[in-house]
Amino acid sequence: MSVRADEDLLRAAGGGDAQAFRTLVERYSDELHGYFRRRAGDGGAEDLVQETFLRLHRAAPRYVPQSTFRTFLYTIARNVALNHLRDRRPSAGLESKPAPVATTPSPPQTIESAEEARAVRRAVEGLSDALKDVVLLRHYQGLSFREIAAVLEIPEGTAMRRMSDALLRLREDLHGLP
Image (cartoon, rainbow, N blue to C red):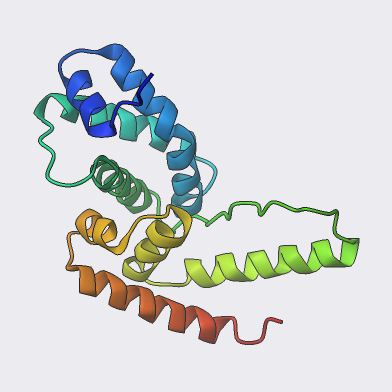
C-alpha cells in the first residue's frame, strides 16, 4: 500500500473525496495542535485547529500547488493564529513540548528543568511577532527556511536573518541560565 502525497490528497478532497480530507486531518491534527498551543496558548488550540481545517477544506477545490502542502497548511494556520491573537489582546502564552525523559529526574532536577522551560517560554514570548513566528515554525514545527519564507511571504534570506536575530535576543535574555 502506497502513502498518498499530501498534495494529491488535497486535490482529491477538493474533488469531493471525504476520505482524502480525513487522512490529511489525521496526519496534521496533532502537529497543528502543538503549533497553536505554542502560538496562542492552550485555551483555544483545539478551536484553532478546527478553524484551520475548515479553511483548508474550503480552499481545497481551488488548490493549485505553488509550494508544498505543508507550506500551504501553515500559511492558513498562521493567519488563523494571527486573527485569534488580534481578537484577544494581550497575547497568549507559549507552551513547550515536553521533552522525553529516559530516567526519572530527582525533584531538584525537575524543578530546575521546569524553571528553565518557563524562562525559555517567557523569552520566546518576549520576541516580536516577526521573530517569534520564525522560531516557532523552525524549531517547533520543523519547517525549512524555504517553507518559512513562503508561509510568511518574505525572502528566504530574511527568514534566516530573523532566526539569527531571534537567537541573539534569546541568548541575551537567557544569559544567566545554567
